[in-house]
Amino acid sequence: MKNILVTGGAGFIGSNFVQLMLNKYDDVNIVVFDKLTYAGNLDNLIPVEENPRYHFYQGDICHPHEVDEVMGRYNIDTIVNFAAETHVDRSLMEPGGFIQTDVYGTYILLEAAKKYQIERYHQISTDEVYGAVLEGRSKETDKLHTRSPYSAAKAGGDLMCLAYYTSFNLPVTITRGSNNIGPYQYPEKAVPLFITNAIDNKPLPLYGDGLQMRDYQYVQDHCEGIDVVLRQGQVGEIYNLGTGVETTNIEMARLILKLLDKPDSLIQPITDRPGHDRRYALDCSKIQALGWRSAHSFEQAIAATVRWYVDNEWWWRKIKSGNHYQEYYQRQYAGREIKN
Ligand code: NAD
Ligand code: DAU
Image 1 (cartoon, rainbow, N blue to C red):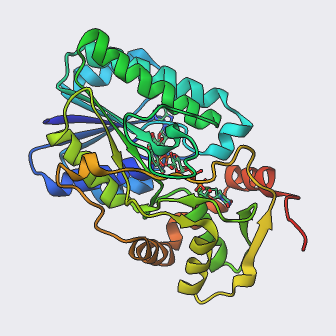
Image 2: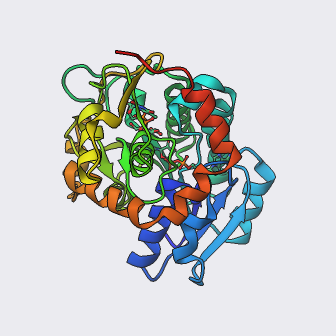
């Protein structure tokens, strides 16, 4: 693992992974390959932009000639694929782009990995592929039960990876992570949206009864877990990555308000997300057997995340004041308030 192609490396988790890897190892070169969609942001990579072991290539994983060019130019031996359309609510509005990037784009990367006979292809996946888990915890061997266009597209990508392992012996690994929070998360996702709205004394739009449960993990812990799988994971295997602790959305919203010293009355119930998965919960014993565990509790992760958004208004105000964000916000939230 010397020359790593990090696709989607200008997004939230990808950029945290790039920073981690460059800081942790002095013998890896990282090439970020990113289309720079609305979610891709070169500001996320400012901390590494002067590093001689970091390179950036703007490209689309659905374009084979661009992928081929970067593979050859940088002598890539490892691909870590973060590139995806990632927001469930957008997948309900416009599913096509999810199928294109998350399934077809994965196939293009797998073909390149096969052609260049690389050492490892690692796919970043999600706990959402198991579907809602009302009781117990999802194991890596559980059947997939996808319910949103996003999770269905991610499952398609996973299955294609496993097919390339089985059919072509491609050295593939997959991690399925729970909800990440932390620096550089685009403020459409619940936690950064609630924090930034609260800072501005704006309502926190809470879907339905707010009793849905998620396992919120700190992004740096997730990135450490990916590194453990790259170094110690077995090819052909899937590893769940999460804290194993779930929190309701209303508890999450209240904790954010408490940390910011804002009133609970900012919570605004709105109509629920269609097909909203009630609960995700992961069994993480397989990755724990490799020595990995989340270092941050939910409370520590939320506190660190709130602190980062308070300290980095320059980062999110640019995004939230832009036309793309304003139009999305209007389309997504206008007229959904539930009156008491
Ligand atoms: P993000 O939306 O913040 O970033 C996605 C990145 O991919 C952006 O930089 C975007 O420009 C890039 N991209 C999109 N389409 C592309 C294409 N066709 N070609 C090249 N680049 C493209 O996403 P994230 O939250 O950082 O998620 C990263 C990965 O982790 C995704 O695969 C996602 O499914 C998975 N995941 C996310 C979470 C989470 O809580 N955010 C949890 C588990 C798994
Ligand atoms: O579980 C992993 C997944 O976590 C990743 O695969 C996805 O890429 C990532 O977006 C995230 O999906 P969720 O749908 O769980 O995250 P989101 O931040 O959109 O929502 C978290 C919870 O908060 C969920 O139960 C829906 C709720 N919510 C969300 C938004 C945007 C609200 O109540 N109000 C909101 O405005």
